[in-house]
Amino acid sequence: MSLIPYSLSRSVLFRLDAETAHETTIDMLAKTQHSLLRRAYTQPFVDDPVTLCGLRFPNRVGLAAGLDKNARCIAAWEAMGFGSIEVGTVTPKGQPGNPKPRIFRLPKANALINRLGFNNEGLDAFVRNVQRTRPANSRSLLGLNIGKNASTPIKQAADDYLTCLDGVYPWADYVTVNISSPNTKNLRALQSDEALDALLDTLMQRRAALAQQHGKDKPLFIKIAPDLEQDQIDLIATTLRRYGCNADGSHAGKLGVIATNTTICREAVQGMPHAEETGGLSGAPVLEKSNHVIRQLRAALGKDFPIIGVGGVLSGEDARSKLAAGADLVQIFTGLIYRGPALVHEAALALKR
Image 1 (cartoon, rainbow, N blue to C red):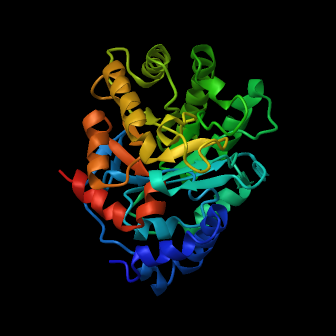
Image 2: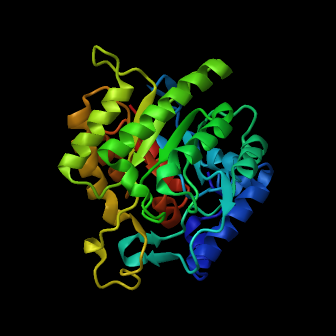
């Protein structure tokens, strides 16, 4: 169990501005993850294996991408009890992201707004960090989340995704394609019918070539937004089935979906300080919005298509609601900031079957 109550750490961190607190936490985790000091945040590991896309996930709770953009703390996240760890989003070239300030807390809503904009050190540094910080005997699965540079025209986005896929494939258990951040101009346009079809066609062909080259099949997951209408979800589901299912309709084990990213909707936080800041809203207000998309996806995709649910998990009950909506696994991001590492254990126990 953690040696330091998170309530104490949080009281200190919440006195800092949100991005400074985040950077301070990442620095601390990076420095302590390979030492006995990691006991300060270690949680008991819940053994609850489930197979998805041909991968054996040791439990149903994962870290969502965005907290560890440069893959600096993989061993620390494993110590907290995550069955899967998704790091990134990484882009081919390093980029600073959007101007600061760009992260805002909404504590009354257990929420955050961020407009970071894929700030990261670039693909080469990312891969070096993965090699350095992932434990040699790691039991947690590793997802590597890829995106496009802000300077790359949207019509050339596939080139950036291919560069990143080539670079991360040897080191990932699965690769997530982020086409849903609201903080990179026009990125969500890649969720449209023709654009998604073209992108998936390109990426799935390259994935097959890489699988042959490296002698190991690794699935792709597509991360989508919560701000979608029913007809958009149906079109996405049709495209996912086209590339993710066999001719007889059975799942081929090579493609899944993560639902959802942050929302641009502010209805649930109207009137709160920072509510009108530009960016993606995450945390408790996204729970039902995300669950609604998951339910629609499950109905459209059928019972066997892999869905990872993310958005608004701040308790074991919230995690169960994701599975009740149709998700196979859940991921946590903002909940970790508000609840600390104990949430990982609580959620994993709540989902254990």
